[in-house]
Length: 221
Image (cartoon, rainbow, N blue to C red; front, side):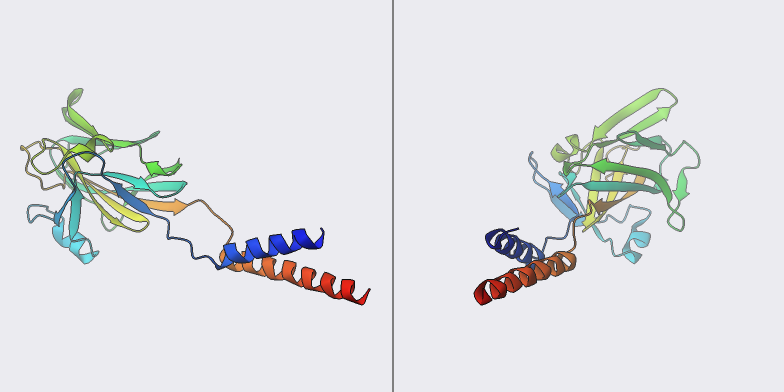
């Protein structure tokens, strides 16, 4: 490698290693009216106290969920308060709550639904409700949820914290009660691995040393 190439590679590497990358995680996407509506978790949500103990006190409607980079998302089922059988699907992953019991609490031992790779941007998942086997009460996709807010027949509320997102489904079996506790999903995002700044920095310092050594030998010659 000649001196000019070593110098260029060294500078590029040091700049890359010194840059502070944004923390990868979940983002909310709002392209459709109504605008997003962030509120305190309503008192009618039967898991309000449990969420408060986890630092989750608010959620947002009228938006969709995405990630800001490529990686994988793992989904966990936490519980429900609903007589309907509620279904969550994300790509090839799926989980059904069943009709009984009406109250399911898995906060002490969440159920891993599975993990799926994502490219970044809008996530592909949906919730569906069934009042009896084969009798659908409707579905809402993540993309459709951007246009839904309080008072919608069915909707999803979101609460995001970096690489963690909570998904609150309201199946409106008792009407649009907006308590969003009919199916509770936790999503965990893991970004695609990239070289760490420290590793890049050491590599850059090595290249810099080679460059300086070559300059000294050239001057002596």
